[in-house]
Length: 472
Ligand SMILES: Nc1ncnc2c1ncn2[C@@H]1O[C@H](COP(=O)(O)OP(=O)(O)OP(=O)(O)O)[C@@H](O)[C@H]1O
Ligand SMILES: [Zn+2]
Image 1 (cartoon, rainbow, N blue to C red):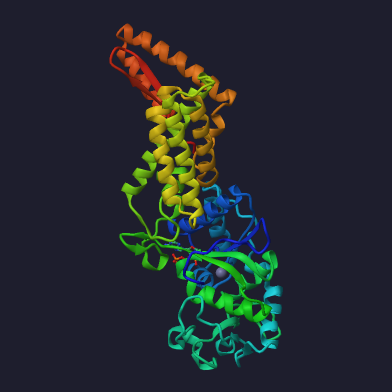
Image 2 (image 1 turned 30 degrees about the horizontal axis):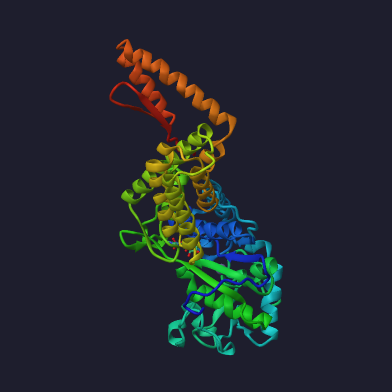
């Protein structure tokens, strides 16, 4: 609202109530949606890391013009459309490790929506038009435009098709009167269905209260959707501010254009996930700050894949070093210096995340730590500095969630067993090479590579290895 950074103070100490506008389920979820949902997931995870209890509500719009149009075009029932695409959306959430606490659906809240609209009519903020549609009377709410910074009624023109019956062209629909062939619910003003904006005012307050902390969505939702949600809610509850902090994600673009169904340039998540693992996608999506634009390119994903490999390699090497090395009472000057660099990375990560959740800078701090890990900690067998470095990777992973399996493995007996097995296979392969059975040695090497275990043959015959397997 203030167009500036503010210190975060939730309504109630220690608790964060967060509402994010979810999808209208009429088509496959694409990478643009994934960008927004991963961003809020990381925000939630970081707040949790900092000790807040976060309640995350993300709705599903399961009745809307777009859904009805699609059902009509395909000659299917609208509920089938909702079923197909909400399933696809849930699959994406699961693959990307996004855990939303409550997923309210519009059609489960019709009664509450009707009551809310009736309340707005009773308070003089809404009126029933001759058709039986109900509109919000924008002129009755003086704060309209404060969120989006649009104050000119001329810019507010909404719902052109119903201009005739609105008091002002900028009023927007709370309830849409039934037209033949459309799904409907009975209301005091006649049959119909809710407009788009009202659902979020109703469902957020039902689960989070009349005022809450964070409201999120893509930047395309600032106007009119969030402006309208805010007008409805502040009018209805008579409390200000309805939302303490508005957070909006920048667009995911492709060749500079917003990825969107209407532009026909979308990459469905399910297609993308055939080519890149969910961890690579997550790391890429978080490689930019949530408010900035992020452009899709194969090169950017390859970069994310390479970064993930480096992170995973460093963590698995570090875990192995920690199992083998021992604490050394006094730290050498060299280890002290290395420890200082690890501490810098630790603060670098938290400083970036505390500065409006800057995941781009947080990632850079951890990639720098990876260079230090590989060049100094592991070769130096620096136990104390290594232990702290592992802690940094763990906290990083609490937010980024791309190293779950390597970190779980770090210290677990299963990982140790794998290592011993790899050692045996590597020594058998050494023997084969000594006997000049290079075909066999090569096939062992490529079989291991398929499992993500990479062997490095050094001059002089020594072979080292590391686990680079992608976890998903
Ligand atoms: N390209 C994008 N980049 C970032 N966020 C996006 C993008 N496209 C959609 N979103 C966000 O995803 C959420 C779900 O949006 P919604 O279901 O309204 O999308 P949509 O209108 O179906 O998408 P499209 O723009 O492709 O038609 C919203 O918060 C929206 O802002
Ligand atoms: Zn909404």
